[in-house]
Amino acid sequence: MGMIGRAMAKALTDSIREAGYNLNMEEWIVLVHLWEQDGQNQAKLGEFAGRHKTAVTRAIDHLEELNYVLRVPDQNDRRNKLIYLTNVGKEMENVLRPLSEKIHQEALNGISDQEIMTLQRTLRKILVNTRHHI
Image (cartoon, rainbow, N blue to C red; front, top):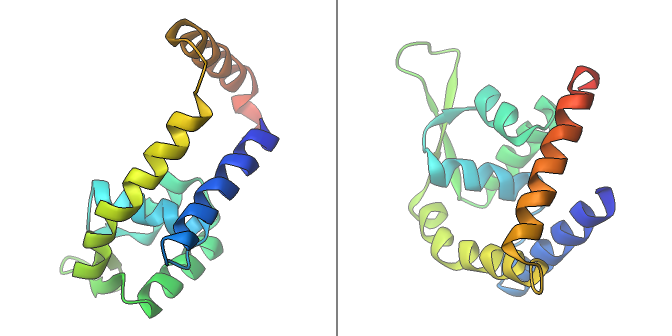
Protein backbone atom coordinates (compact mmCIF):
# COMPACT_ATOMS: atom_id res chain seq x y z
CA MET A 1 0.00 0.00 0.00
CA GLY A 2 2.88 2.33 0.78
CA MET A 3 4.48 1.70 -2.60
CA ILE A 4 1.20 2.44 -4.38
CA GLY A 5 0.73 5.65 -2.40
CA ARG A 6 4.26 6.79 -3.19
CA ALA A 7 3.92 5.92 -6.89
CA MET A 8 0.63 7.79 -7.20
CA ALA A 9 2.01 10.76 -5.26
CA LYS A 10 5.06 10.89 -7.52
CA ALA A 11 2.93 10.67 -10.66
CA LEU A 12 0.73 13.50 -9.43
CA THR A 13 3.65 15.64 -8.29
CA ASP A 14 5.39 15.12 -11.64
CA SER A 15 2.23 16.11 -13.54
CA ILE A 16 1.72 19.18 -11.38
CA ARG A 17 5.31 20.28 -11.97
CA GLU A 18 5.01 19.65 -15.72
CA ALA A 19 1.98 21.96 -15.66
CA GLY A 20 4.24 24.66 -14.18
CA TYR A 21 3.34 24.49 -10.49
CA ASN A 22 5.88 23.84 -7.73
CA LEU A 23 3.76 21.93 -5.21
CA ASN A 24 4.38 18.95 -2.95
CA MET A 25 1.74 16.50 -1.72
CA GLU A 26 1.03 18.34 1.54
CA GLU A 27 0.37 21.54 -0.42
CA TRP A 28 -1.78 19.63 -2.91
CA ILE A 29 -3.87 18.13 -0.10
CA VAL A 30 -4.40 21.56 1.48
CA LEU A 31 -5.53 22.98 -1.86
CA VAL A 32 -7.96 20.11 -2.48
CA HIS A 33 -9.60 20.63 0.91
CA LEU A 34 -9.84 24.37 0.33
CA TRP A 35 -11.39 23.79 -3.10
CA GLU A 36 -13.99 21.69 -1.32
CA GLN A 37 -14.55 24.20 1.50
CA ASP A 38 -12.72 27.51 1.52
CA GLY A 39 -11.99 29.32 4.77
CA GLN A 40 -10.87 26.47 7.02
CA ASN A 41 -8.57 26.76 10.00
CA GLN A 42 -5.19 25.11 10.05
CA ALA A 43 -6.17 22.46 12.60
CA LYS A 44 -9.10 21.31 10.47
CA LEU A 45 -6.91 21.18 7.36
CA GLY A 46 -4.37 19.08 9.23
CA GLU A 47 -7.08 16.74 10.45
CA PHE A 48 -8.47 16.26 6.94
CA ALA A 49 -5.01 15.86 5.46
CA GLY A 50 -3.94 13.39 8.14
CA ARG A 51 -0.72 15.35 8.45
CA HIS A 52 1.22 16.70 11.41
CA LYS A 53 0.65 20.34 12.35
CA THR A 54 4.18 21.38 11.34
CA ALA A 55 3.80 19.85 7.86
CA VAL A 56 0.52 21.69 7.35
CA THR A 57 2.08 24.95 8.60
CA ARG A 58 4.95 24.60 6.11
CA ALA A 59 2.50 23.80 3.32
CA ILE A 60 0.35 26.84 4.08
CA ASP A 61 3.45 29.05 4.40
CA HIS A 62 4.63 27.97 0.94
CA LEU A 63 1.17 28.33 -0.60
CA GLU A 64 0.95 31.82 0.90
CA GLU A 65 4.38 32.74 -0.54
CA LEU A 66 3.13 31.63 -3.96
CA ASN A 67 -0.02 33.76 -3.52
CA TYR A 68 -2.33 30.72 -3.69
CA VAL A 69 -3.79 31.18 -0.19
CA LEU A 70 -3.99 33.83 2.49
CA ARG A 71 -4.50 33.76 6.24
CA VAL A 72 -7.36 35.84 7.59
CA PRO A 73 -8.09 36.38 11.30
CA ASP A 74 -11.24 34.59 12.41
CA GLN A 75 -13.82 37.22 13.36
CA ASN A 76 -15.04 35.02 16.22
CA ASP A 77 -11.57 34.30 17.62
CA ARG A 78 -8.71 36.61 16.55
CA ARG A 79 -6.13 34.03 17.74
CA ASN A 80 -7.40 31.69 15.05
CA LYS A 81 -6.52 32.18 11.38
CA LEU A 82 -8.71 30.95 8.56
CA ILE A 83 -7.08 29.87 5.31
CA TYR A 84 -8.67 31.17 2.12
CA LEU A 85 -7.82 30.63 -1.52
CA THR A 86 -6.76 33.63 -3.55
CA ASN A 87 -8.21 34.04 -7.04
CA VAL A 88 -5.05 32.38 -8.40
CA GLY A 89 -5.54 29.47 -5.98
CA LYS A 90 -9.16 29.09 -7.07
CA GLU A 91 -8.28 29.16 -10.78
CA MET A 92 -5.64 26.45 -10.31
CA GLU A 93 -8.38 23.92 -9.68
CA ASN A 94 -9.38 24.05 -13.37
CA VAL A 95 -5.87 22.94 -14.36
CA LEU A 96 -4.84 20.68 -11.50
CA ARG A 97 -7.96 18.67 -10.72
CA PRO A 98 -8.09 17.18 -14.26
CA LEU A 99 -4.46 16.09 -13.84
CA SER A 100 -5.38 14.25 -10.67
CA GLU A 101 -8.38 12.63 -12.32
CA LYS A 102 -6.22 11.49 -15.26
CA ILE A 103 -3.70 9.83 -12.94
CA HIS A 104 -6.53 8.21 -11.00
CA GLN A 105 -8.01 6.80 -14.21
CA GLU A 106 -4.60 5.56 -15.40
CA ALA A 107 -4.10 3.79 -12.06
CA LEU A 108 -7.45 2.02 -12.40
CA ASN A 109 -6.93 1.03 -16.04
CA GLY A 110 -7.91 -2.61 -16.61
CA ILE A 111 -9.46 -2.99 -13.14
CA SER A 112 -13.16 -3.86 -13.07
CA ASP A 113 -15.72 -2.11 -10.90
CA GLN A 114 -16.15 -5.38 -8.98
CA GLU A 115 -12.41 -5.57 -8.29
CA ILE A 116 -12.42 -1.95 -7.07
CA MET A 117 -15.35 -2.61 -4.74
CA THR A 118 -13.63 -5.72 -3.35
CA LEU A 119 -10.42 -3.77 -2.77
CA GLN A 120 -12.32 -0.95 -1.03
CA ARG A 121 -14.10 -3.41 1.28
CA THR A 122 -10.83 -5.14 2.08
CA LEU A 123 -9.01 -1.88 2.83
CA ARG A 124 -11.87 -0.71 5.07
CA LYS A 125 -11.61 -3.98 7.03
CA ILE A 126 -7.85 -3.53 7.41
CA LEU A 127 -8.39 0.02 8.62
CA VAL A 128 -10.97 -1.10 11.18
CA ASN A 129 -8.68 -3.88 12.35
CA THR A 130 -5.73 -1.52 12.82
CA ARG A 131 -7.48 1.72 13.80
CA HIS A 132 -6.40 1.38 17.44
CA HIS A 133 -2.79 1.88 16.26
CA ILE A 134 -3.50 5.25 14.66
